[in-house]
Amino acid sequence: MSKVSPVLVWFRRDFRLHDNPMLRAAQDSGRPIIPIFILDEIVETYGSAPKWRLEEAIKYFQNTLEGLGSKLIVRKGHSLTVLNDLLAETGATSVYWARAYDPRSIARDKKIKSVLKQQTIEVKSFKGFLVFEPWLAKTKAGTFFKVYSPMWRALQELHVESEVDEVTELKVPEYWPASVSLNELKLSDGMGRGAKIVKHHSNIGEKQALKRLYHFIGTKIDQYKAKRDFLDENYTSGLSENLTWGEVSARRMWFLAESSKKLGDRGAEHFQKEIAWREFAYHLSYHTPEIEDQNWRQNWDNFPWKDDCDEANKWRQGRTGEPLIDAAMRELYITGKMHNRARMLVASYLTKHLLIDWRVGKAWFEETLIDWDPASNAMGWQWVAGCGPDAAPYFRIFNPKGQAEKFDAKEIYQKKYLDNGSEVSVSARSFYKAIPKSWNLSPEDSYPEPMIDLKVGRERALSAYKTLQSENN
Image (cartoon, rainbow, N blue to C red):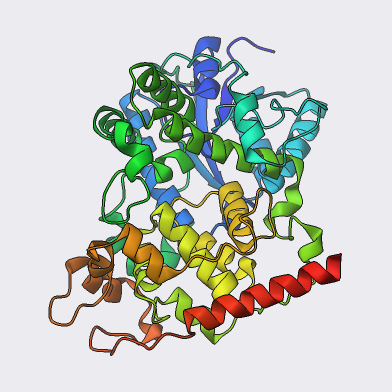
């Protein structure tokens, strides 16, 4: 291997300079570095909102690299083919990437690593966007965890490696390969007119991510546990989209929370637990990849889920007749995100009151969330539906009205996202500017009647669950 041969550094979900082991290793090698992004067979499967948000992450990171005198080479095609083309064009003899942990990405990376090594190309994978690698936490029996609480306890016994130094310079190659324009990838096309609305609510790029993180640690983390579930207050970190695209390091979040815990901030440990919940999702995705599209508990395979239908469409459009559910679904379309409490409520309503397959809801989140995360999305839907790991008990059926009284007592959240007669908020009006025209909805439409009586829906769900239980006994 020539000491002057370039290194291809393949960016997927790691658009930052701080605590980026892959990029720091490339800098420390002293070799020329060619940063690359590939619109490959995995990225092609992303939904409209994730693709749009990915494009925004790339745009920002392109400017970041230019500030270091470097650039990001953009290509489109099958990943192995594109990598081979770039290796031939540049004379690079090494490929670096940060590990991905979802089943499809793992399969892709294993194949690429095998083929390139046969070609005597050095392939190095580095720690990705997690605090702990999914295989590290083990039960006393040496197996993987199926329940969150004991895994949380086990994680506290594991050493967390220190952050790597921030990248400050990147040696440029003598020759830059051709790059396609980001516009040519058409990543944002699926968002249509909604892109302008959602962007207003986005927090894009490493600089903004770190700014938000430090603000949260300095002003909100103490009250995080006590107030995070209240829809009418703003006590979440707001970092989900940045974490998804690697604009902020999960390890930095963990260490800052650890420091806050030592200072006595009451919500710090709970914030760490939420980070660990995401780690649990990837732990399960790694060990049981079927969680993405099959009932994790196989005894649920006979549950009488309904497929996609008109009721599901009304749920997607925020027209169920349940104000809190509709407000949450409209928040999703307006902002590309949804309050975590609200995610549980809309998932419970779809899978329990309406008895619609959790995969219908999972697919909609895949399409519309700018903070979409494959592992967290799959586990979250199965957890609420009752068929997943560490699942909510089958009889835990959230009542939207009761939840509204508890977590949005003054209806601040509902009024923000729903029509309210003559006093329609800016956010509520922007919903109609974001949605597809084919939905044929307008602020003048009367608010719909509830699709189902909440008591009737609850009793129907309980009956179905009890029947399933008796069949499995």
